[in-house]
Image 1: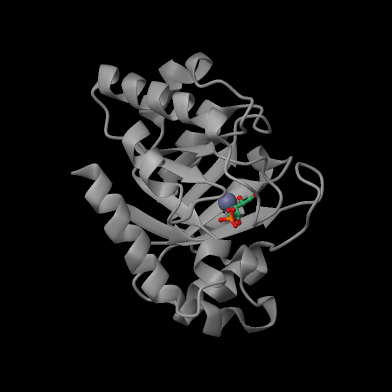
Image 2: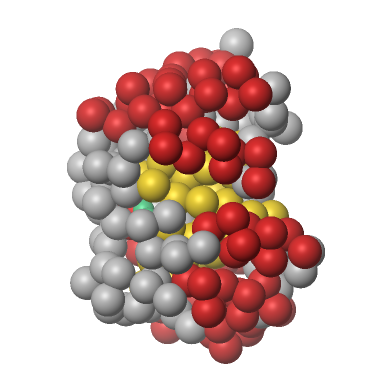
Amino acid sequence: MGIQITPSILNADFAALGAEVARIGSADWVHVDVMDNHFVPNLTFGPTMVEALARSTDVPLDAHLMIEDADRSALAYVEAGCGSVTFHVEAAKAPVRLAREIRSHGARASMALRPATPVEPYEDLLPELDMLLIMTVEPGFGGQRFLDLCLPKIRRARELMDKHGIETWLQVDGGISLDTIERCVEAGADVFVAGSAVYSADDPDRMVAELRAKAEAAAR
Ligand code: DX5
Ligand code: ZN
């Protein structure tokens, strides 16, 4: 599939989300950070808002669920029109069942790991996933500093995928910018969330192009 750029709208103007999403027309996905004020200390969108957002753009939505009751609520985001739904393994009680449910309802299934959650215990689960998300900050807020300590885990995750011969996408999220994207590519990531880097730029779509160019160059 190659390099994909998935801007997070967490740092966009929430009073003008339709217009904000229209500023990133060249993005591969729009990354929608769903927070419940329990799994993380912040509160954002619910399924009704996400459904309205899905109707407002042709770019597919990539929902990142930072919520406690992922097992019960994830399908609502598939039904809201998200093409990809990511749940946190630390929250899901039955991650295998949940991944299968997401897939059977027609979305890509993805699982996220917080910075302190190792990937090795989930090796056998990787073939159930379309994407693995390795957080490179503690989830909850945009604009945090990239955690270099996550790089070895990205590398180990890519090695496990290669070992199993699977082409699971490997997404990184948190502190991704022109300064940090290359080391993530070198470690094996191929899908890049960028929130503040994109929405603090004068021209967000140009930043998407610059991030893509830098990542593609590093991948060669
Ligand atoms: C953090 C979110 C991220 C965040 C990224 O909990 O999952 O998607 O918006 O923002 P930046 O790129 O500013 O770290
Ligand atoms: Zn996110």
